[in-house]
Image (cartoon, rainbow over all chains, first blue to last red):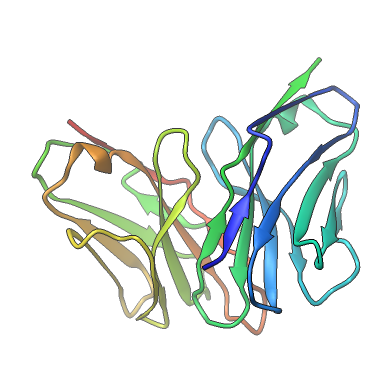
Length: 116
Length: 114
């Protein structure tokens, strides 16, 4: 079974600064997808960024980028120019590419605080 | 853009009662997933349906059952409710695999069992 680990229960960053959230995972599969989801106080789950394991290029979405290290099974999220609206719980998630309807397996989450 | 719709948004039940949660996926999405998120926890996968057939099963109690209907909406039926069933229940949907593989989450149903 796949597992996802987020070793930072809480992180804080100053507004306009950069912060990196860590995520590691364990799998025996070679083809899979990785995601970062954001959960603000409203509890809505919002997709931030995705990465296909077969792609070597790191995904980027505006101020959000990832550092995907497949051999090390590491998938960190970098948030640049942090904004107050970035404050939320961030979940790293894994999904197998082999079957339709396959589940997301989440890490424990990292609570991000943005200080003005 | 259309989003995943869940109803009801809030539900209060007593122990041993039954609850039914409904999920309406984004149009053209053929796969539906159910997740349970307890207080301070990450979402835990319960069950999923692809083209109206169960496609994956997680840690769903035997007291719970679910199905996907011909119009692709799904219902999660929960019986003999326990205090520990109090949680936020998410439904998510995804489009045909040929297109994308993200799961789009609904706003959740907050179930409180007293």
